[in-house]
Length: 229
Image: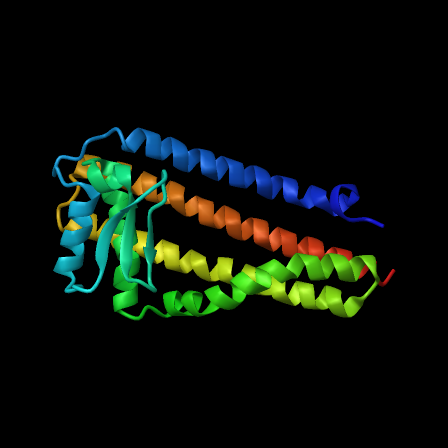
């Protein structure tokens, strides 16, 4: 019975896994480089985040530090922009780019950006479904139950959809971030390229995650077809 380490379809995941490793390496490399490049404005990530929020009339979002490297994120449930301590406290090109990106999500929330609303609505059900998808699929495969296998695949479809919806959300936040950084003078022309490279590298990690999810779905569908042979 093919599954797990003896399953030949596992080979499908190797290119996607390599892509994910390369993407992670690029974002870490870009961050290492641009977190050492001091920005000419002298603004820390926290300063920039608060100023951008204020300039967009957003007064109900807090900016606070977060532990862990590259732990930066926007929490729509608590309306908080959380920046890793280094980006929160330091005046670097990376800090400006990342802070502007996370505030980009806060602006999306403020403007009721449709893809962000959809992703937020999916988050709870997908989180629950992701826990059950593989156990149900494996049990169904082992005991030759097409119904359980199909339920597992259906639940995993939600995971794939979540990853796909995440792409426009992240790309739009980066687009907003670069427009703000350039138009409002947060970065000088010579710093703009660094900020863009930082954001592009981060975006590739989301593309890699979506690719991995899609390939995993294809793998499950192939295994489902093998049950009928």
